[in-house]
Amino acid sequence: MDHSLPGSSVHGIFQARVLKWGKAGRKRTDPSPLSLPFCNSIICSINDVPPRRYSLYTRTWLGYLFYRQQLRRARNRYPKGHSRTQPRLFNGVKVLPIPVLADNYSYLIIDTQARLAVAVDPSDPQAVQASIEKEGVNLVAILCTHKHWDHSGGNRDLSRRYQDCRVYGSPQDSIPYLTHPLCHQDVVSVGRLQIRALATPGHTQGHLVYLLDGEPYEGPSCLFSGDLLFLSGCGRTFEGTAETMLSSLDTVLGLGDDTLLWPGHEYAEENLGFAGVVEPENLARERKMQWVQRQRMERKSTCPSTLGEERSYNPFLRTHCPVLQEALGPGPGPTGDDGCSRAQLLERLRQLKDLHKSK
Image (cartoon, rainbow, N blue to C red; front, side, top):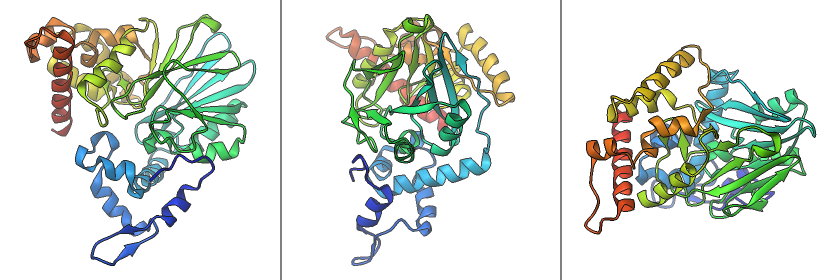
């Protein structure tokens, strides 16, 4: 299913698609609510989905049904959002985190002088629209990090509401309602905002992160990392290899220490717990965990962190560190290729993280 055609109706696509179901000859042509219990049995979160079921989420209408169910449940359970967030206001630029679904974050990046806004991964169009109205700004662009519904599900409604709104993303990723494809190092300009797309494949084939240049507003740069990088964690490698993901993480490692990290999910406490398993004597991790636990007791958001902080405790950014190499191995391969060794270590870390989460 290609759900990236601008102006197409997702529901119409689903109605037009005929899916064989059950016994031979029995067919369904619409996403009936009766299918939702089955959808529940497939996955509880895209970041928990077993690889063998991943295609059901990304390539059939079941993924969209699951997203819609997530949306309804989250709106009922968290009418004001899953976390309390605080905007960051710089010299004429405002970054506003918007808690959506059960643990996602969307963002508004606002040029406060021109009253123009860019939305990053607007998965709940209702929540994003409420923030747009509260801020009194005009939405002119959507930046989508990747195709998964919990990051792209609001593209249709918002692009229809704001007819001049451009939808940016990778052409490799079947972004819903994509109008302006981006490649590595392409720059999106909105008012005084200069936002660079960086190709970071691995989680999906076309995953992008977005770097807001801090120089025009004399502040820190801001990295909107989608599902590549979280506070003390990284995303699962669904559509790539460990080598691919390592290369993408190294792209981020090349950015400045003061760069603010704005991730796609609130995973901080769980991720830091795992980091303590693999590197128990890391004092930076311990200090950050204490702060995060205080934040979460009051349902406060833990973002942003900085890339400088992440280098000190995020194990997925520390595959070059001897302490992790000694604890988890393996050493350099027979060719002495350190890059290969780091990729093996990253793969091992990801396997251990998945086991840790399942306990």
